Length: 468
Image 1 (cartoon, helix red, strand yellow):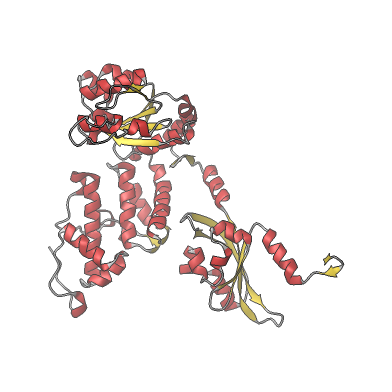
Image 2: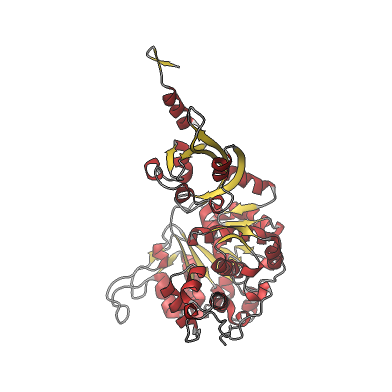
């Protein structure tokens, strides 16, 4: 190759080639510090070249391969190439990126190994196609391969574009708010705000002020105007969750907003335009409440223009592996861990549950597993004691009778007790195993009212008694 009649240096040609290909390429020296980093590597990882060069490769890529069977390490140890190892990295936005990796030794002119070179390809599109071909379906943040959900996904785009009021029905924890967000994301209002409020958690007066806002002087301590959720969601969508828990008096005011598309802030004299799409959600049978006189018939028919019934998780168990994978990805990003997946025995145990708490309960179980599992795969030993076969601590609260919040408290308490016992009640060692600071562990011990023996595990080699 020539340039202005002169031979261009080979290194210059190589640089041009490396910058033009779509595969990421980087090299490391014997200390595992990155010595070169091409343009595609920047794009895939989201890490600028000047930040990558000089850093240890595992600091940049945060791959599950870094913890165990590293192809680049094998290449530099054995002096030979390895092709097409599948793994994933965590990019700068903490998103999991599936990649294919090929490695080769980096040699000088005499054949001596200077380090290693790795090429990697972003397989995100391939993975999405594979999931699609395997029968999974996706809408917004919802993923499913269930025939029941497939029917809902099929009509979701048309429902989203209609701008009509939608009633989403489903048990607690079945994903009603996620469905509402998917509707908003598919609609023409997608670039405007999405606001959700739990109507059942607030008394009438507070709910009205939260939704419609108030003017200065409307009540004691109302020193300035405050816009409500209807104003904040202007041009967008508002989700009224647990609508079946509201009083008939509030239902009258909501009906007026739906019919007139106007609302009046507390203490105000002028009505304001409500340019919002209303999405309603409930875990109760509104038709039955209408017959009992507990829900206004005219409001029911006003919100029941399009009805989307969400099936509970026990009726679509084929979605459990997909949801587990999604929750593992989510927790890896939040906790900065490298959990690769779940062992078949543990997944089988999850598939056999009935999930009275639905998807929220499954997510809670995976969060519990992350307390005990920092790498590798989630096994039976990482699941809550009621699932792993271990005998639960006598003082742990009964999660089934106390709801999802009690379940979270119970699983957290159980995980802390087990970690303390495994480490001979050494607080520092238990905190490290749980992936938290020692002071955080102390706060949780106080909050959960866990009593510990007076002798710290660091000062005794004997096995301490179980704390009641």
